[in-house]
Length: 313
Image (cartoon, rainbow, N blue to C red):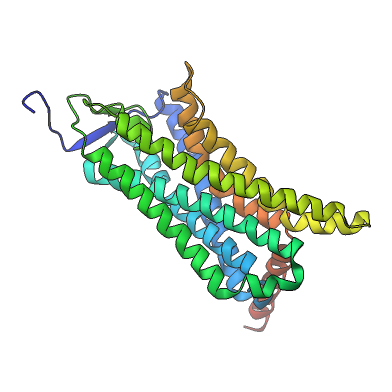
């Protein structure tokens, strides 16, 4: 312990870019962040207002929007702040909080996407029993389990990381406290941490992804049994938005945490982490609103209602 240097903050190196480029990125990231917040808030609002959307599918979508709002708000404000200051620091408490929320929200989204695929499987393959199987008690238990599992696993990661001794090096080669980047600063064996991360990847990534694949194989078989092409198209359209989000989210996650590192792995991890923090929360509401007739119809109805209120006020 005598050789350990104790400190109260980390330095976030982020991207090595000029001040002019940082200002451009600040404006760009702020714009995308605003779109993410507004888009997800609109999804929440329209689902709460329109009684026709009070179904399990949109109940799960509400929680996905909450996750995306929290995801973006966990990292992006600090990234924006670092674009404007010279000393890009974060306290140990802030780093631990950032790390915990990033992983907890990521784990929760993995679970929610698997739950949403199960919902589509029941709706398409067992339509007559849908209201019995996906009752509100079951939906509530599935959502609570998703949040609890995500929070618990994230707590295990952070506790194990914070039990490690950190020596003189305190420069995190990332734009936020991502766990792999922080673990590189530890001056102790991190084999246990890596094993826990691998186990979490199996539990949170591979297992739910396998369940999603099984659900969609059954859905595909059910769609192929439909005689009319129009019927097949309409049935598939009910789950196309979810399938798009699953591909984007799981594809990036598996590339970061399950593909062996290459020479450009640090840069790749930064870009993909930025995708999770900023791009994905922005794309999700756009995908669900642009490719979902019910959500588009509810948005149009809400716009008309607001227009009528302004006219009579």
